[in-house]
Length: 112
Length: 109
Image 1 (cartoon, rainbow over the protein chains, first blue to last red):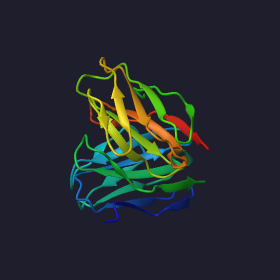
Image 2: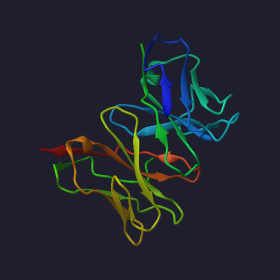
Image 3: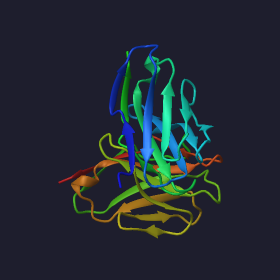
């Protein structure tokens, strides 16, 4: 039981490049989330999903897109990376909207 | 903006109880209070949550005041491995967790 896994762990992009972050969970959770965390701050919700085939915007969705084609996977895309998107990205999943969230180890992204 | 306020940092001696306060004076009657912690830069880890009654699990106890405007997380016997940033979190009307900057708890030997 791996819990929540994220790929890749580290990535450096040049401004304007695109990339996709992959999150996978093996707990059969309906809810999945993408957060970003900037130095010294708490997490901010980018997008979330309440089930396969659904997505919704969080607090800071601009510049990101997501897809949930399979229940166990939640993809976060950056179409044209900007230095302001340099951050640590965390994925999480939960059984229901108000149950505990399980987090992945994070992806450190640097945009130069 | 975060709906909770916490002190930015606290110290506690190893083996002692660590008491972490949180103010959530604007919390609604049906909103839970959640506590998570983040060790180094790892993914956050759930600790406990509660609505109005005190809660206890294998990690910690949560004491919520009767008016629900504040709460205290208690780690009964702190160890060096409890050094982390502790987040007291409310849930907004869209069922999203609103994270503040948390309290950096340092356990000293």
